[in-house]
Length: 396
Picture 1 (cartoon, rainbow, N blue to C red):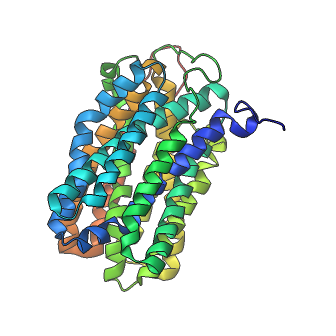
Picture 2: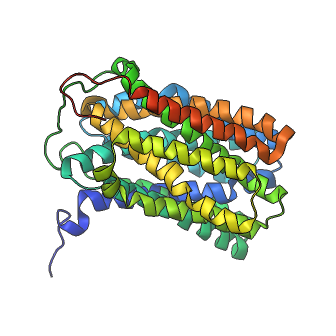
């Protein structure tokens, strides 16, 4: 009997990483589809549900950079990813016994913090792996979006046929699957040869505060906050405009599918555009898309507007990842990703608060403010081009 070696192409580092991305987003997709309804079924109020979801965000603000520093100092990033995946899986088991606010809050927060803290580490590890091996980071990350969409569909079908009690066992099972798949992740720091050093590359978090390095990250955080605002508020807005739940779900899935498709185009984007150009394209497209949403367009227009999610998120995300990978050294890769997440979370929380007030007073017209925010992000990108990297380095 012929044995298959894990070193063969079918088990390449890229394919193992892609499989992990797919499984890591399954529990996230399942939670997106049904967690809010499950919280409500346990008698939690909207205010309590909001507190449960905001607590991990504040915690991650405090620990993301620290977790990244620990991961960078380890012999390989996979150790931190495995530890976080198993911690999330074990903590999720406690949800079996959580039936009131405080136990649910504690269990959900621990799971969210554990899985949220290793996301930036995985992005850093995968981007360095593909940079050294000449493969496509976007093609790996696309499988995360595919897993997310699949989990939304799976959760909806299982809840329809088996009832809401199936959610927690499903959520736990998907978390355990992610933990098991994490065990076959490759050694990222050894795969594909040594890292490439570049003159002017940041080697410490303080170096990230230089204007030409910090400005593109702030720009993307600002643009990304408008994407997050859409994710949180758009389904409610569409419901108020008379769209059915099924149609809303299909539109959301359409945007995710477009995002995944664009991720697979990452090699073409990298050949034809520099990192900051990609962020600028995302920002300008986001401003146009949001302005259109502010006009409450009818159904035929919502399809192309949802397809633009491929540009407003995927293109900008790939540009930011390309920028960080190019200008930060391996010894601070995960820390740099954590730094970006902190910036994003601060801007996103401000955007959520402002949009909530504007939506109450102005309805869909509040999206004009989001469009203006995307233009501000675009202007920051343009401004960052005035700050030049050290002489003799390639353009970013």
